[in-house]
Length: 81
Image (cartoon, rainbow, N blue to C red):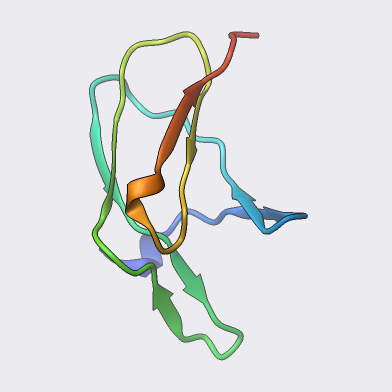
């Protein structure tokens, strides 16, 4: 993975980082978060790469991740709107 290809996230109160993406159906994605320090140093998320397998839906899929623990990934599907 190349940090120069990173997709920027938006920060909000409570240290919640978000991004809205359109991802094709049937894709198996591997990803990892990085943090760029004020010094420019890149800090990689610890642990294994994260994974998401997309499926066909008209609803928004929300993926909740924990920086340190890959085991607590939570995926929810909202209502279409």
